[in-house]
Length: 187
Image 1: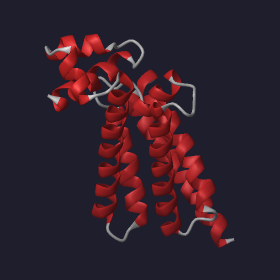
Image 2 (image 1 turned 30 degrees about the horizontal axis):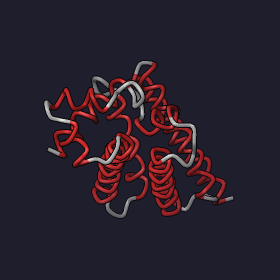
Image 3 (image 1 turned 90 degrees about the vertical axis):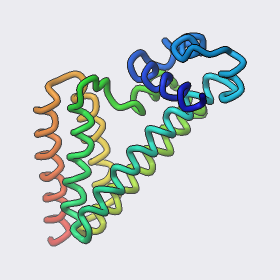
């Protein structure tokens, strides 16, 4: 039942937003009772956190997979990571990055939703920093921050604009950024 509740919440939260979806709506979608809902999740906040943690785990697994596939080629790992991000952004029904969407709805940085968002973004930043460090770019932390900005822009653009064009732009901007940083490290 927990998985059914989480699956229904995931669909509804992503399609409609956190604030627009009540616990009652999720309960009705699953066809269960409030007692059953609250047996699995103490509150709607707990369910939102579980949803975001599941999304974060999926994204981490995807990035870890492409790094493993790339083996010892850090440029390939970065290219495959961008491809994975943009494949998601080009998928039918894409409504933007669930973490950016969640942060937009919950401004308080201490809210449990924002804490999950921050932890996931930190993980993503660190993954970019590791890839860039392996490439030998100058100041991989600064470059990782720049890639996060590109990723965020692509996530929003993939929802608002032509996702295929956004994917091409992300790929070329990412390569240009990495190339410029790599040249700076050799200078």
